[in-house]
Length: 229
Image (cartoon, rainbow, N blue to C red; front, top):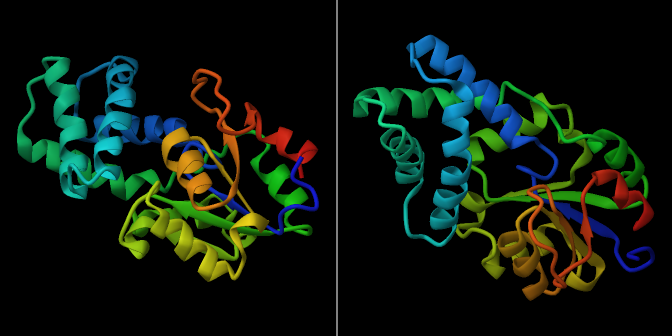
């Protein structure tokens, strides 16, 4: 589908290559044990995972700050679960979460296989809304940093996906025209609609089993990329 059309492939990182939900679960397991938080992990995660997506959307839309995101996504979950916890402990959990998160390095199935397949044929890059201080650690610790020529994050760009400025910065850094570029990501709004508005080809990795749509081709396993490129 995209063969002979693109020279550069841009990936989102969290929820696309790096298995955020799995690594986040291991991180909470560790810090709950260390801070003696007596909650069933599955009970906590069932509330946290949708709450995290909601607060990330607010962060993308500049409604809340990074520090508010880190605090509110935890505070709201503990409140929902009626678990008594002080603000000082929430602050500790928030800090420890960031400290430990990049030490867990689960990738989505077939990530390395697909990157090995693409690397000789295309220039590969990352465009991420994640926090600058941990995104590079995730790439290095999971062993995939060396696949990518350019790594563009929202703090570097001063805006977050889907703002066109971050995609324009990525194109400028990569030295490529949008019509020769493919964006692959999990978030329909940030990755697919944002990149389409900037002139990219797009491919939606539907990691969250969202409803089908006609905005871009959809894949459910990264391995499917090999039949398209």
